[in-house]
Image (tube, rainbow, N blue to C red):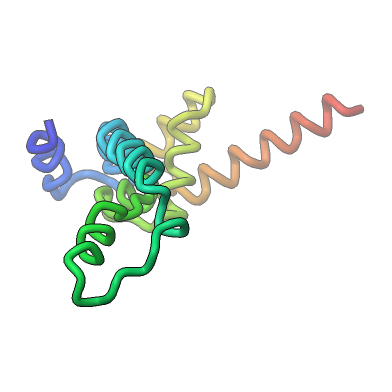
Length: 132
């Protein structure tokens, strides 16, 4: 599965929002790895609860290797080739119910940033109209 996604992302004709949509398919893989790391850290008591072995100790390197933190959003953004901020905005657009806005951003009529601003502006307007 990863190979197929790598091939899709390697195509040069994908826009940033399209790369974000493809990268979202990686999310379960990275989230699963993050869950495994959390469980492993819990079994070992985490780094905060473990003693600090000497630098020459073989335990020092095994603790460091087994407790690599995974920032799922950062890995997905790197996979898509965009910043974490752009990735978050693109994901919010893709997850929204506004199909018209999604299509405008996917087609390139609007940038991710412009689409995000419109989406958040619409949400603010909805909140103020509900409160009145």
